[in-house]
Length: 212
Image 1 (cartoon, helix red, strand yellow):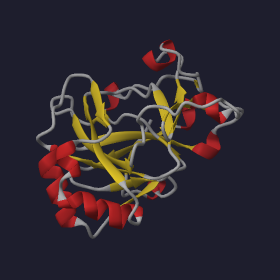
Image 2 (tube, helix red, strand yellow):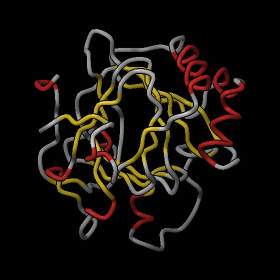
Image 3 (cartoon, rainbow, N blue to C red):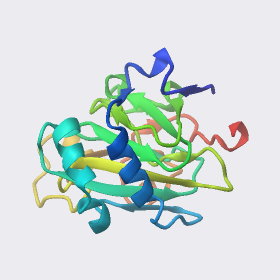
Image 4 (cartoon, rainbow, N blue to C red):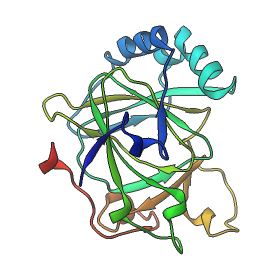
């Protein structure tokens, strides 16, 4: 597996680098550096300290067109794919350290399954704000340096990834909705699948440990 850069042309169908928000990026990076980084993966949908920053308004206005947003984080250490998810909206990521995203496209899902051979890896340099398109499948970041781990801001529409609405399943897509505005494809080897998430990935459970 190649590890591309988000500045490479291969990233264009998955997302884009956001330019022109240098002060916002600086403020968010400094605040993100104060969040904890453990030896596992920890996700917080919204962080009170990040929500109170002037940068939150900037993200809302310039990245989401004025929509209510939540600024959270995903921190820790990880080298495995395990699952892929998507939302109805773009997700914006920013790291205090270099990190790697494992990505695929929603249109590559066939009959409810995605072959992990279609997954590509992209390195995001520290301090670079990236948009991951709504049609891009993604999940927890991977660290680029096991000594440093990763601290990654996750900006999404308000209440995304919180408790799943009480609703009756009507469509096949409803079966993979595991939280609000979150549709998840699990690899059979993942803890998510063992916990009841629907298996939607076939092939190797990618591990990039030997590539970094």
